[in-house]
Image 1: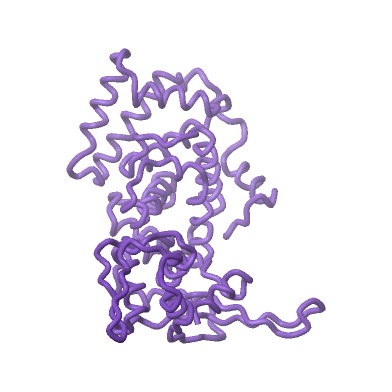
Image 2: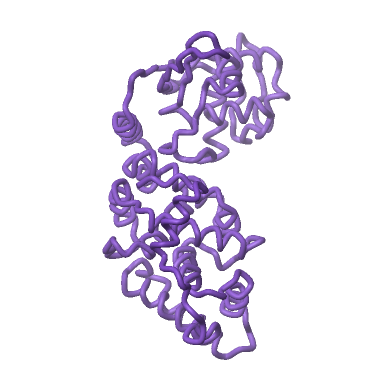
Length: 365
C-alpha cells in the first residue's frame, strides 16, 4: 500500500537516491493530476514499479538481516503521489469529477486534505504492482534502468545518467546541488528537462583537455557522458569542483545572464581566472557585472555586441562557442590584466592530487 511505502521512505528502508535517476519534479501539473485521477478511478493502466532489493546483514543493533529497497523505475510516480499525500499541490483545474456508485466527487483544485475521507483512504491504500530484483551488479543496474526508460520520454541528457555510470552520475549530482546552479536563470520547464545537467556537462567539455568535442549539441553531450564513465580523471574533477565552488561564492542571487547558453562559458571563464593567484570572487564578479550590465563603458558595450554575434542560430557550433570564449577572454584580460598577475605557483595537477588526498571529496578514478 502507498501509506506503507511512504513509511518505508521515511525510515530509510525505501530509497530513490540512485545517482542514475533523473531528478524529481519532471512532470507537469496536469500529468500529476492525471495520475491521482487514475488511482481513484482504477479505469486506467498504471505501470508497475521496479525495486532493487539489497540485504544488509544483521549486526549487534539490528539483530537480523534488513532489506532495503531502491527505486529503479517509478520514482516520478511515487514522488508525485507522496507530494499529493503531503498536500504539496492541488489537482489541476482540468481534473474530471469522479463518479462512484452514482455519487459525484469534485476533484479539481483540491489538495489531499480537501478530499473526502473515503477518497483519501483509496489513495493511501492503493497498491502498485512491484517487481523486486536482487543480486544486481552496478553494470546490470545501469543497463536495466536504461532499458526500462528507453521507450519513455526521458531526454538524451537524462538517459546519460545511466551511460556515464553510477559513480560519475553521483559526482555530477553533487555538483548540481551546489549553490551556483540555484542561481542560474532556468525556467521551470528547463529545470524539469534538467538543462542544468546539460550546461554542466558542456562546461566540463570546455575544461576537459582529454576530449575533442565537435560542438555542444545534445548528441555530443550524450557521447561525452559515455566517455566520462572511464575518463573522469582526478584533474578534471578538481577543475570542475573548484570552479563550481568558486562560482557558488560569486553569485548570491539569481542572475538573468546565467541562461543555459551562457552557463558553460561562465564555467570556462571562472576556471581561466582561477589560474591566477589573486583572482578572488569579488574580483571576478566586478568584471562580470561590468560585462553583463555596464551602460557607460563603451568597451563593455562592444564586448556584449560581439558576444551576441556568436549566439543565436548555430550557437552550439564549435566556431560560435570558441567565438564567445574569445570575446569573454579578451574582455577579462583587458579588465583583469592577466599579464600583470602571477599564475598559481603549483600546477593544477599537484593541487588536484592534494585535494584528492585531503578526503574532502571522494574521487572516482
